[in-house]
Length: 483
Ligand code: SF4
Image (cartoon, rainbow, N blue to C red; front, side, top):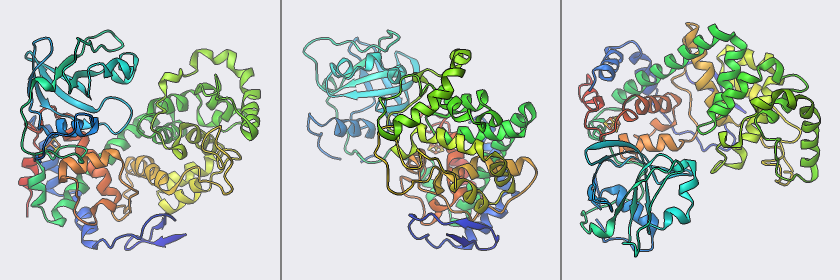
C-alpha cells in the first residue's frame, strides 16, 4: 500500500500498523527547505565551534529501588556527599536514565576529591546489591564511577569492577537532606535550552531542525564518500547497510562482518553460512529442534569446510549485545536480512541509488527467508504468517542513513523534508526530554528530518556536555534566532 506525498511526487510506503498520520502544515516543510542555505546554518556551525526543573514528594518506600533511582535522578537527594571512605563527591551531571542492560545512569560526571570522572552511576537499596547482582564481573559495569546505596550497611561492602577498580560508594542514609520535588518519569532532565526552545515559533523550530538534520546527512555522506574512495561503491554501501542493521548496540559486529564478508561473497551460495559462522552464532547454537535443527544443519554443512581457515576471524560472543533486544529485531534475524540483501544486491544497490523511498521499501520490504521470515529465534515456534525481515521503520532508517547521505555525497538534493518518521527510539526520547521537557510541539515528531535534526543536536551539543549544560552554546543560538 502506498500514498502520494504532497509537493514532491515521491511515493511513500504506508506502514500497515502505523496510526493515521497527523496533519502537518506544509509551512513546516517550506521553512525546513528555506533554512538549508540561510544564515541560521552558519549560526549553528558557529555555536558548535565557538568553544562554549525539579519536582516534591515524601521519600519513597525504603524497598522501592526504582523510586529511589527516580528520587536520586531528580536531585532530591542533593549533589554533594561524603563517600564511605571519606572522599568528597560532587555530582556535576546526573547523566541519563539507562533504559537498557547495565548501570542505572550513564554519561554522568562526578567530581571526586577535585578529580572529574565521567561514567555511569549505579543505585542500589543495599551495598551488598553490587555483589548479589554480579556487577563485579559484568563488563557493562566497568565504567561505573559511583555506587549509590540507600541503606546504611551493617558491614562494609566493597564495590569493584571486573578490572578490580574500586568504585566510590556513598550511602544516602548518611545524607538525609531532601529537596522539595522529584520526577520519576522523565528519561533525562530538561536542559538550559528548554526555555528558549519553548519560545520559538513552529517555523523557527523546523528551520533549526532542518539545519541540524542537513548537517547530519552531510557528515554521513562524507563518511560514505571516504569509504567508497577506499573500498569501492559496493563494499561501502554494504558496510553502511550492515551498520544500520546493527541498530544501536551491534553496529561494530555488523560492520566487522560486512568488511570480512563483502557483498559478492555474502551473496554466494556459501554467503549466509559465512555470515552466521563468522558472527560466532554457529559455535554453540542453542540446542535446536524441529525446523531449526534443519536450518542449523544446512548452515553448518557449509560452514565446517570454511571454518578452519577463518577461526581467527570468528567474532567472540562478547562482541554482541543480545540483552533487551526485541525478538523481531534480534541480530540473528538482522543477519539473515543482510544475507538476503547480499543475494539481491544488484536490485538493492539500484534502489539505494534511486533515492526513491518507495522503490527502497518495495525492494527491501519484499526480502524473504525460508526460516527467518517465520521465526524470531532458533527456538521460537513457526508463525503461520510471515514476518517482514525488514519492516517499514527499518527501511526508513536505511533510507535516512544510507540512501539520503549517498544522494547528498553525489551532489543530488532530494526533497525529503516531508517524509514521515517511524516511532521515536530511546535516544530520541532522551533528547525530547532534555530539549522540550518530554513534549515536542504537535506534529513535529512525525517527520524524518525532525528525528535526524534532534539526533544531531544531541550529538553536537548534549554528548560533549558533562556539566549540566553550563558551557553549552545551544541555548544562546536558540535565543538569538531571527524572528
Ligand atoms: S547540553 Fe545544550 S543542547 Fe543539550 S540539553 Fe543542555 S543546553 Fe540543551
